[in-house]
Length: 247
Image 1 (cartoon, helix red, strand yellow):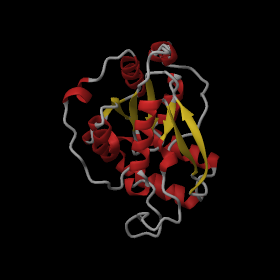
Image 2: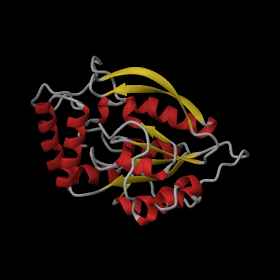
Image 3: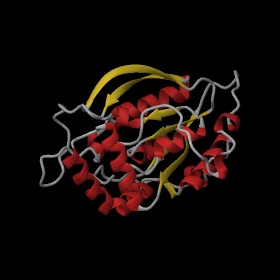
Image 4: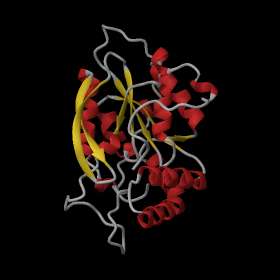
């Protein structure tokens, strides 16, 4: 359940981000297809903030969560809590379909999801125009790396990596501010995720997302915008991994 939904974020930018991706990706009326950068990482790792800094169009993959009444939602082991950190709580098929439609037509209709109510509250049209690159960010982005690569729409796949304690603080402040869930739930979830953060990053890396910090991620996105596809996207086979909890 990652970051703020939409809108650019203010604040100082690291040196790799001084040139916006809007300049990296000049609009061309002759360009009718696009590629996607999948931006993964633990909840609270800064995916939404980084995506906003690029000035590229952004597809928020959290909007493809299942609704709270869905009987297929998984539970945390030995608990009655819904496991929103399991990929089984998310509609991967719909997310991939939206990415492919954006790549091929430049626009798609996406759900608008309320994490506080665990429900889809609206639908809206997302357009990337003629920009040849966009970002799809969310904690489950790594789970669709293999499918996007097979469909030949993948420019790069990145997993943001940082300090677990920093991620814990950032995630808790955000979730409390936005009233996402009850305080006891957020504390239980936050402690569980902090303890498992390194294994989360390892799993997403195994799924084909390159683990790095914010500055390196911005550099890779700039390279993708310039048309230089990452070597691991071109050449490295991605083995499927089970959709288990761990975000």
